Length: 108
Image 1 (cartoon, rainbow, N blue to C red):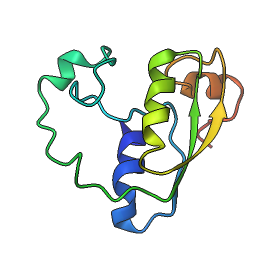
Image 2 (tube, rainbow, N blue to C red):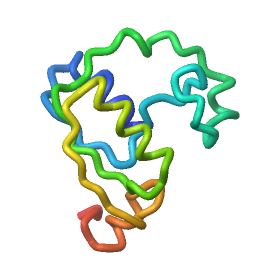
Image 3 (cartoon, helix red, strand yellow):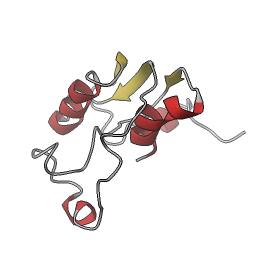
Image 4 (cartoon, rainbow, N blue to C red):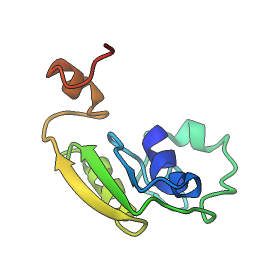
């Protein structure tokens, strides 16, 4: 959930942009009733900081638009910040593996 945190809270640290890969808007079932991938985890979380955010002004968001849940999360993120879309159809969730396979993510 690093992309989630980068978008929602990095403004507190003075960041101007985030580069999240397949980010979630939230896993709180009250905010995203369509999200079922994290149901078990969501039951264990107290969502005390979701309204106390200082989102970054811009997020360059990499995601697979063919995964309906991911696309819906991105649409909700537009309420928090200016989203620049990097749509990678058929890259899956998360899109990280696809980028690594292309040689675009590596550990030097």
